[in-house]
Image 1: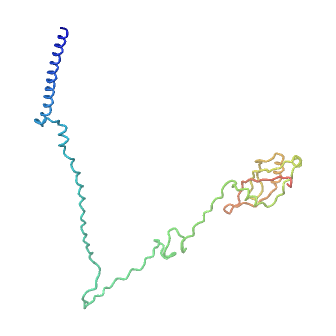
Image 2 (image 1 turned 180 degrees about the vertical axis):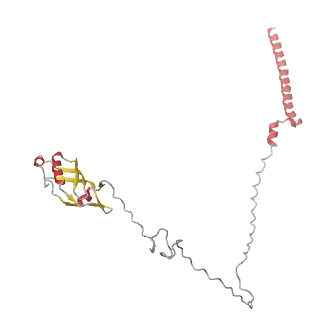
Length: 244
């Protein structure tokens, strides 16, 4: 019994499996056939994107180049000849020629001063000297000489020196081996003598000797605008061991 029961159960399972496979195959075939037939029967059901890509129009051609600007027409300028208004020789010679007489020019008038007839020259000048001829000479204006001494360089003053002894070297300064230059401020009179003398700089031991020597110096007068004038200048006295 046990074996017969197994055989029945096994046969039922096989029978059910066979029909199930056939039904599945038919169902799948129907679905596949439907998918194939639908595009063939309804072509308008295709995707719109594919149709749009196929039906896209090409880009328009570029616009034509702009036409060239119109050329300006230059109008010719008509040259108008000028009318000759000059004098031309007559085509016919007249028989009678009239002579025109011109009046003589009046004699030149000589300017003079009213009420001075017969005095001086014909071309009198107001304010002139009675009986004089020609214009009066231009008066010479004298320039007043400047007041006070005039500043003159030491080089010019040295060239105007007339006389004067050299300074004596002080024994104390020689023993101390002191040397150098003493600068003096001097005012020279119109006659050439020393009026004012001041020490500007220099060694103390040499100043008195320099002043004593320069006070006796004499110079040529300095002229300005033809007049002698006082001179303001500087005088330098050098001391060295070789001499005064």
